[in-house]
Length: 247
Ligand code: OAD
Image (cartoon, rainbow, N blue to C red; front, side, top):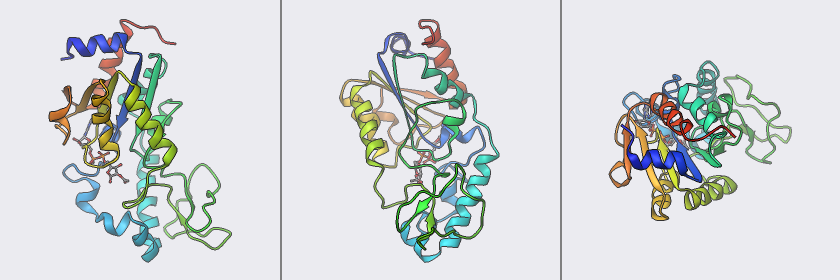
């Protein structure tokens, strides 16, 4: 199932970069966006995931994120998340970049996670930018207000907004520097994240997709491992462990 090149990379690569998408959390029970029955098949993103939508109907948007937080808090990381947490201790350099806002990588033990689309638990004031205190957003159905009077928004990136600059810079540098790049559980349709696997490939990295269905990028990548990440990632880590010891 794993090619000789990938096995060689798992044994020898100096720097491995991984980009995860919603699919890595699917086996935990977190809904994806674009698969059949996914969030964007049921809900209109223009009414829920833009700044304009929030300003127009803050309670609707806030309560939708409260609902999603409830799902996320009620699930557990799966073997794919745990395999990536182990990878951090196995390879000399390992960069974990995620489009997910669900905290499951950290809950699985990953110490360094680069979140391109923010984090659903990190809320902040839309007016003054002050973070809302505490590790978890309150589970209210109505939008909250900051001391300054501004509305509190979920700390996620909405359509039409820029990605956090430091995280995007980190991700691009990792793509430029790595020898092996894994694109895991992402449809490859949302940029700039979707540009990272091809950026890595142009700089000479070996780029592998892990997904039960071929993504929009699959045909351009070097190898596609078709299957759930909760099965394939542990397999890759077991392979790497035949050659490497945990650092
Ligand atoms: P999508 O919902 O677009 O794609 C999920 C991908 O996961 C699909 O390609 C599935 O085939 C795959 N998948 C499903 N089950 C899987 C499993 N068990 N193992 C591995 N892969 C599996 O999600 P993303 O690509 O993450 O942005 O979407 C990117 C962004 O679009 C999201 O971060 C979100 C959304 O709009 C914002 O909210 C800013």
